[in-house]
Image (cartoon, rainbow, N blue to C red; front, side):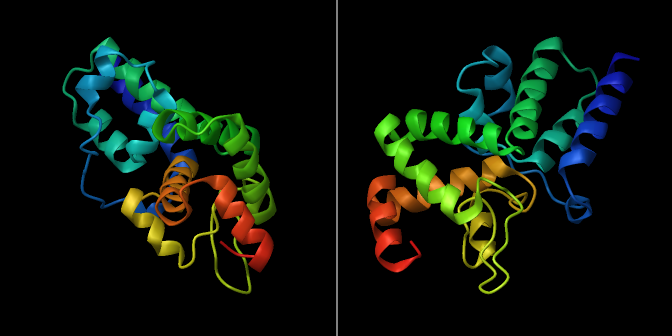
Length: 189
């Protein structure tokens, strides 16, 4: 009964945040995080951890457990909540700020630049699409398929988009302020 309730609750939540194209996705958990690690300390770096694990993997985990432990359920619940919160611009900003600080060490000043950049690009809307260029998501990736390297759920998971966008900025410009400077010169970054 406990398993049924958990699967039903998460199925409902995940149907809200996934699309039908993920029905046959194979499970691939990030090497950086496992369900067992999450169960040991589910609150630690939960924004960052949620960005490192995609929705199909979470769904497969919940569905595959014969007996869900309370800690497992709590860890998955926290990740699902983080993803759900990030679907709104306010939640996406909070996630972006936390991930930028935890993973890249970028503080308030750099986040100010990131906020300006992504507000101009997408208003932190994970469904934003430029009809002229086809750029997509919070960071306006072009082509949008680039974000697939961070997760198969890049179309529907704002944390996957944020993780990809921050990685792109780090590799290409080193900091959000340098990326913003480039954007101001050329209207793209």
